[in-house]
Image (cartoon, rainbow, N blue to C red; front, side, top):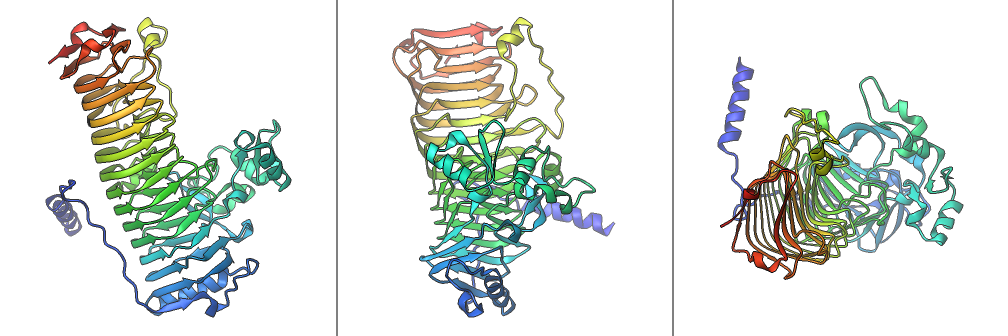
Length: 548
């Protein structure tokens, strides 16, 4: 009874003291502090010749620093070859500007351990840099941390020049039978072809994966269940898989960090913040092979059982180059994401700008997301993208309407994801395939989205599919594909368009589709500039669209 009462009191206290965050009341992130005592790795036998393996020396310096109450472990100028480095509490690993911490290409130095990958418990090779259950830690300085990822990642031939491909093949490894993909080893290729490779399912141990160990690429940095973490000033590059992965951490600060991965790096994410609380990422640059700044919280049932959202997060004054997404939530977001504030960022050449993605089976609630002051250029696909069909393909409305395809709408369960209460404003994008794309599920529409004050230069304008209670205000859609409608609506309701700008002479302003489309209002918008104001298809009623 006492345990039950304690639980009730904790939950009640959490409810009573829950913060109502806003731009005027942002979450507060607490930073670590350290003693000034300094432990130079050369005192422990480290040699900067690029040949000597300094694993023991660097870890010995960290161990002694922590044992004596903490301080700074200094990596001075030089090229320091090493195997896995394990952080300890109260240690600031400081890498001088002229220092390179080079992780060895010898895979035997990275044993298989029980870890986590894409939201599931998984067998992985030990990360080059890691820490578990720590408090008060930092990695600082202007130096370079190199994960030697080229020796771990596979690569398709069409992603390299002919000379680069020949050099890669000559380095060793194996090429697939069709000659299209290079793998570092037979074990790597076998893992690639193995279903659920690496997943630690009940009854399995890490020993079960010895025959595919080279496939189990480590993330460059993994911090698990740590508190008061600072990453500042350093460059993290060439990661085998994700570059920076923080899991179940609290009070995480990332300031003036530089992530550099090749654009073709498989799973080469910049930073993945998973099930963390109180996070600040600022003044940093991410050049990534996959998503740039990514929010996660576990995958499917495993993530829902964990039940830890990523929350109370601030992202500001950051730059993302070339990544699959500039700022991303998902797709592994089964624990939820909330109270996230993103502002004053630039995305250059990313596949998508703002990318929120999920799929049936994930579950989880993404809510209370606030984004403003984002500038983008040369976006490959969408500037603003919210999609609940990640790697899934809904039937075309024409096929459904004609009876060619039937739609089986599943019941809403804990595995049904939700996107709601999202606010995005002051966005400028110069060049994209499409300005805005919002697509929910028929059983769970995306809802309560506010999009305002945007100038989007793109081939196509906006698409809203299976959406409810969406407001678009002061949106200028400068489109080049006149064969496409400026705004496409499909089976969506309670949409409010206010002050929508578009090119004079546009072929069609609104395309309204599906019998669920209703209560669509348009205000302060000159609809006469389009050749055709609206078209109604696939059962959409003409009174679904109303001028206010």
